[in-house]
Amino acid sequence: MKKELIFEGNEKRVYATENPDQVIFHFNDVIVAYNNVKRARLKGKGILTNRISALLLGYLNECGIPTHFIERLDDREQLCRKIEIIPLEVVVHNRMAGTLAAKLGVEDGFKHSNTIVDLCYNNDELGDPLVNNDQAVALGLATYEELDVMLGIARRAGKLLTELFHKIGIELVDAKIEFGRASDTGAIIISDEISPDTCRLWDEQTGERLDKDRFRLDLGDVIPAYSKVLERLESK
Ligand code: C5P
Image 1 (tube, rainbow, N blue to C red):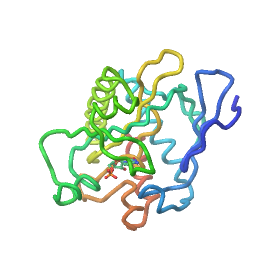
Image 2: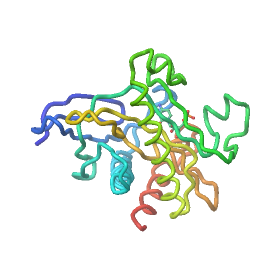
Image 3: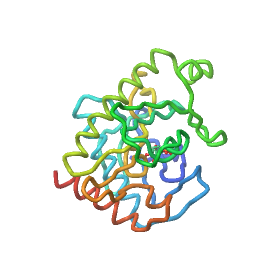
């Protein structure tokens, strides 16, 4: 079923299949941070991100949020709808942490009552700069109509994921969501992955970080933290 490699990223590979509108995502054990400056291989990480992302994207599908996810094939692979990549990242924040907290001069984890939705240009050379809708349209990255759809989906997905994680004692601090145009219909759908690699997840009781910040900040125990997230999602 798996055919030629069509994309090779740091943390995953994408293969063509016999169906021109479907691809296979393969998750490996590489972990990168700070725009690929920091890099390591953590045994079993790809199994965890594959399984967690399958559960989260499958949940969004069930809730009527369109994603590229079709089904998990095994520990490392999932079948997905083929998309045309839109080089934008939508980041939903329930708290200010990481880059945003540093930029605005507040403490990491600053709590605000509203939801913040940021749009970034996915461009490693430029360091994924924040852009507004007009700039994204001017660069030809998406149309105004597509941006409205993306931002609306991101807000709804953020709310659903926040509620889901709350049920298992985890606070969704922020989440990065990517989009593409489905190759068969052209519809805007969520693509890529949603996992502790792309979200900040804090234990509600202890404040323990259960996400990639363990790697970014050299806190250790990355695999045990990701395993906790998977165990709690599976136990629900
Ligand atoms: O790095 P920053 O603080 O802007 O990250 C905000 C959120 O988006 C975090 O959950 C982070 O893991 C995620 N992110 C990502 N990929 C990037 C940049 C950020 O998954 N290239």
